[in-house]
Length: 518
Image (cartoon, rainbow, N blue to C red; front, side, top):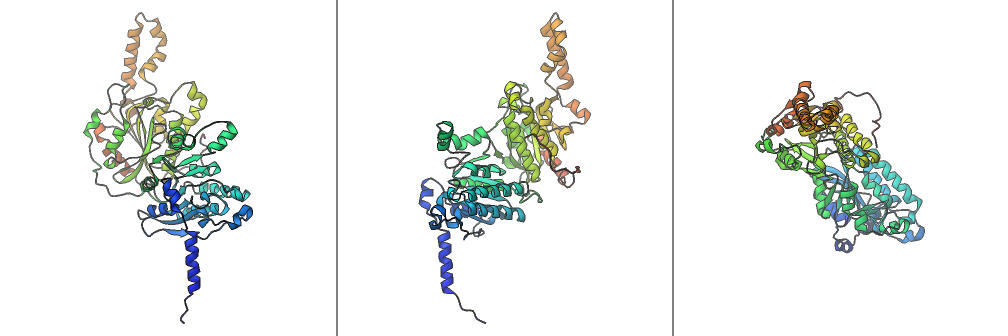
């Protein structure tokens, strides 16, 4: 049987598609932004994007909403391939009623996240919205709850990345902040629990949007923006790079790529990279760039809590998370912000099977009333929970100082490290010799006829006994003392050994989850 075509129906379909995809790009382009559909086109491999929910329409009729046309409900949702791998996206369309978040806008977001979770593919949210659609009242409010619930249940199952490409204020800001990583456009991305007008009205603070909610507010001060991008395309490029380190879901292994950087490569200049004087800093970025594949390191939260470094690199093609002290800032001490930053990074890597390498030069947790009263013990414990809970390969390299609580805060054998290596320059002990001697021999020094000489002698004795890597190695707490030049080789060999370690091979008694100090 031959069926007749339906030209009227097809023309109606064409018109509906055109109407649903209607976007006035001029206003976006004037602000230096792409439209939602331009962002989607740029992000996905050509010809691979499949839209979901193009014809979804809100049901509210109050306050003139029955006469409003909101193309695609102000958000483009769908899936496609990014560098050959499936990814789900929800891209808010600021040209459609300012991308405001209403009931069916939220339903589309939720559908995208739930489908991504069920199919085991990453989710990327492109945020550019005027906030809550107040015309929909309680329906808008409830939709936020659906969205938060959906993304929390997907957390730890699929990677989630949020992009701040425009405003994201009010309750809506909780959506991106609860995702795994947040990329913020330097000039156009804004996030805050309330905008300047509301802040001015309710608390009397006069502040600009950039000061309150811009990139410095979150990439530097609050520690909520992981990556700062120059514009939309840069944000999308950085997101692609970030995704390349992650598996699609928590049941897959991270994607290993071909590597042309010799895994056995020696690094001769490492033998002189750490100054002999314990008080002199060195730049840990110089260590990282030389030890990883081809010097490529994707740093996260680089402008916040800079006394600790976190980010992704590869060893012989394997994705690895790196946690390292930065001796050039506060001597690499662990403070409240640094421990929060590191703990969440460690837990993400553990959730998605990404091995972790710790590079240590740390004199301890930061002391003093300010840190004590703000809860350094509670915050510092987060790192201990993160390391101890982790079931991915854990490798520690101690370059110089590893004192007191920071010894296990930066990963040692007792807290869960699989392999611990130490450079000959390392000093592994409970406290520095000068501190120990001033406590142990306080009375002797005080009563001595030559206090300065006695103190110097006792410090030297304590240092010779304990301030070295060999006492730890004698006890088996350190697996090997290695020459700095061999660091890359030893990390790669350890990763080979630990390649099959995972949550499936680590025996733990059943529990819901650890009661981490939040």
